[in-house]
Length: 236
Image (cartoon, rainbow, N blue to C red; front, top):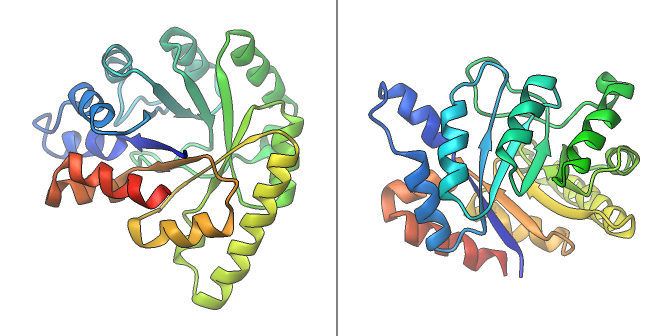
């Protein structure tokens, strides 16, 4: 059965917009797992916003399975080592004040990345990396000694139909290579109920799906319980 990860970043951003009167992230994490999410995720940035260190500590206490998405920088490595999440996803950091992030640029990090991965893995942490859905990114992730890749689908789901078909084929090829290299395969970025079936059909090897804003926005209309169940049903 595929695993469902719910990112709480949109709730943290909503709290900031409402000047602290938004939802409690720890309570949301507890409810999400009770109604069917396998894990919850927080995206942390060096500036610690909109997700704060206090949020990480609170959600760590409340959640059975916490994931952190972060850039591989020393300040955030320290946060991860203190929080001891069940899983880390290394990614590029989003623009200042934004909760979104993109695939990690392996060339930009160069030889600085492997020591970070080694430090995290020696601490017993499961380390994944957010990558573009292509063969070279899979090879780079494998060379970095991570345990999993998460394919960034944010650009794929917005492509015109003809380009989207080619993009789905690339995703399928990348997922097959990752599996061959014994990397766990996940997807995340821009995924809604409408897109999930098509994306999963293109890459049956996918084991984990991370969703955020689309599920949170649906929960505003139908409640968190129903929103989580709707996404779980699409995972197959």
